[in-house]
Amino acid sequence: MKKRIALLPGDGIGKEVVDVTVEVLKTVAEHFHHQFQFDYGLIGGDAIDQKGNPLPEETIAICKQADAIILGAVGGPKWDQNPMELRPERGLLALRKELDLFANLRPITTFDSLLDSSPLKKEYVNGVDFVIVRELTGGLYFGKPSERITYEGQEAVVDTLLYKRSEIERIIESAFEIASKRRRKHITSVDKANVLESSRVWREVAEEVAKRYPEVTLEHMLVDNAAMQLIRSPKQFDVIVTENMFGDILSDEASMITGSLGMLASASLSSTGLHLYEPIHGSAPDIAGKNIANPVATILSAAMMLRQSFGLEEEAKAIEKAVDNVLNSGTRTADLAQGNKAASTKQMAEEIKNALADDH
Ligand code: NAI
Ligand code: MG
Image (cartoon, rainbow, N blue to C red; front, side):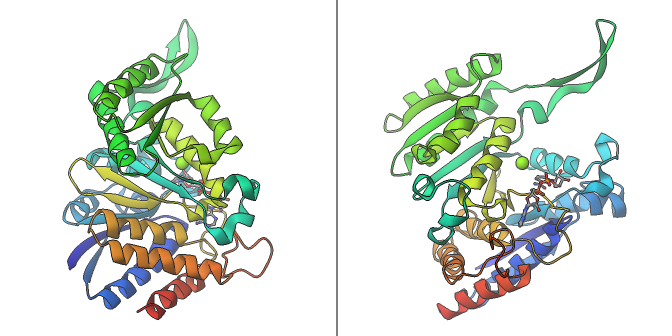
């Protein structure tokens, strides 16, 4: 199989984790006799420094010519004081909008060998297996106006939570599609319907869509309760569907079930079929450039790409199994080493490559 993959490493540890993920993908290509062509694009802070734009036109073009996209992370203190339009995060938000990447899938599963790494008790996290489906192109992060204003004669500020009904419908449909293929076929739709009108419409739409999926059970949960339930009994969840900001916050929280932000992969699916894969963590300026970041989230995102975008199930499983084997062997990056000797980013990836090779 011949595929073009656009690589957008971005800033900070984004570059480090994407670099080693490419090495893992090259190993997969070699063992399974595929050809992957990698095309690099600038996004985020580096793009601002070099092109004066967090999402240069060339980057969009590179993405559009590709079969799938892998992104590292954007941002860093260097650009924190920049005006809004010259912030690295703008590049990522603009890319999501430009490519209509509306559904962000974040699987939360535990690894047997990491059960001790979660701050939660083993018996609570053992067997956790759910997916957060987060709306990614609407809501508070995109609504206009978003600005400082004068209100009732005072300095004030406004952000806007805006959703078209069709946008709510398509994300909830995506969640039902996913749930209908899972064993438990259960959806928890998370909102704040006791306060927000947007959440009341969200509930209405969820009920409507549910009628078309009689085999799936739908439950509604308020977001504050959901935040608590994720810690109290995470095993109750199968598929969680929620709007952009709630999903952002809940998925970082859920990462702690697994033990580290550095373990969690994600896929951002578009209406066009061109999907983007990225770790859920950011550019981690506190550890950038030290070769200590955990690359597993990005490597597992690449596995999601092979499965979802290219239909390469066996190859995806091979990566997941290699990661599992390496963790079972005791190798840990610093985020999971609990003070013991830690493997570097490169060593971790190298072991995963070796485990892949051993298997074939
Ligand atoms: P972060 O996710 O970058 O880091 C949070 C904490 O987790 C840090 O202590 C970091 O060292 C640790 N961490 C994250 N990924 C890790 C990994 N792979 N291995 C080991 N440790 C890891 O979030 P933070 O610090 O809030 O944001 C830093 C920058 O990243 C900001 O500029 C922010 O805007 C940006 N950001 C970008 C995202 C993206 O590109 N998708 C998402 C979240 C934040
Ligand atoms: Mg986040």
